[in-house]
Image (cartoon, rainbow, N blue to C red; front, side, top):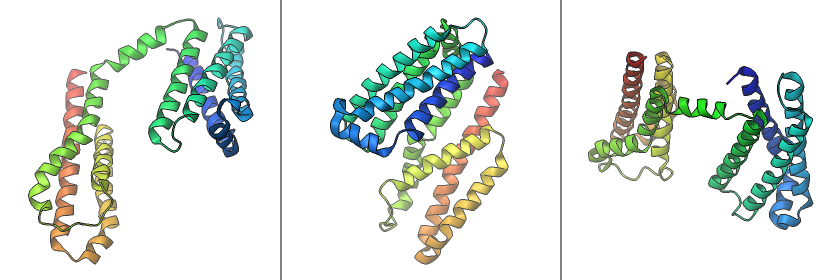
Length: 254
């Protein structure tokens, strides 16, 4: 994949973000939810996306040699208009305010843009290169590591901490908040370890200690303090060791 080809793809994604989040008033969204296929603002919205897509492909066609002309840019814009209308109409039939439907909506739009991009290029070579990169040992190893620091690590740490958690009264925190915080914490530590930014791991520990200091001081519960410290150190240590081991493995394989 050349730099110019990647620039076209990024331009299409940027145009989508502008059309969906900067040039779509809330009134348009509400009108689509209320009137569904009869919404004139849904038509306005997809036409904005079509214009943005056409602009990106037309500019790229003028700037790059050996690329399709304005007719191909118009065909790509038409494909985006039709697909965007169908996807947004389908989303309007689903319950509003659900993260899963938002993510599915965006994923479908992005997949359609990738298809338009490949059709405009007239080649599946970038797709083959992307698949080859995805199945490389480096990417598979990193993906497995990030998967390990989410639910598998949360389950293992919960089992390791059970003997102490049973000694504590209900802490009065949000349901599953500790597990979610731990997942994000381990993902961040793993990222820092893979980037060889170990000093930042220490900064993360200090920042979390400062944030929890007030709660622990007010609780005046030595058991809770020890429990939080033990859980934090176990979480950070497991992610840090995994990151260092993965770096070593990737260095040996490279």
